[in-house]
Amino acid sequence: MVRLLLVAFVLLAACGQPAVGSPTPSATASVAAASPSPDPTPSPSPTPSPTPSMLPIFDAHMHYSRESWVAYPPEKIQALLDSLSVTAALVSSAPDEGTFRLKAVLGDRVIPMLGPYRNGSDVFSWARDGTIVPYVESAYRAGQHRGFGEFHLNVGQITLPVVKSVIAFAQSKNLFLQAHADARAVAELLNYVGPDQIVLWAHAGVTATPEQIDALMAKWPKLSVELSLRDDVAPQGQVDPKWRDLLLKYSDRFMVGTDTWTVGGSYTGNERWDAYADIVNRIRGWLMQLPDDARAAIAYRNAERFLAQLPR
Image (tube, one colour):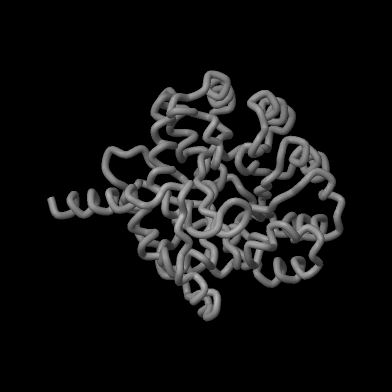
């Protein structure tokens, strides 16, 4: 009974955070920025404690960047994920140290992604910043990082020297690519890397239509798609008919994610972490409208199988 009360308290606390549209940036984030600590040594993987009867969720798009380290220490995130039955996550951070701070507490529930960003401003400049290449090379941890990304890619940038260099480095380490790109930019990426490269398309292209996504998935069998930020999948909580058809057609290649980005674009603080419980519950709500097999596949099984099939 005590455990159930504690779980209920965590859920209420998480759901009671400010909405995404009215954030309150962390006042203490600058303290962490001023005094970064050395990377901790990862501890043995803890056993996840999913809430009974909840559909497990594998979060295929999570960040743990510097601005979150004080407001959301790893132990707080662990309790939040446990309360929501989030069993594992693909995590990239700015800087990369954040991912391993989280992994030191959550163990194998954190699957590290090698990202090109040291801070929020790198999102907008990385593709033309030559200092990104040595940063990526120095941050890479053999046997730890499984993918490269999330990286933002605009139309025409695939030919830039920095972009080509980091993609070549990722390929040399057998990392899959998690690209934040619209339909045209991801098509350029896919044509550049070829049919054997495993790509996870972040946000389903942000603005890409179901028809555009369908065409690309039909052409590129090794393209998987994650759905963070795609509220149009289920407007007002009801799965859109076009999206439903697409999800069922490729039910073995879609994943879900939350995107807990902090500084950059429209995010100025910890809005996504503040709303994390609501985001996960909304995802679970529309997943429950799908047939059993597709629901479980998109919620967690596709991500688990995707990782199991990656080259080492």
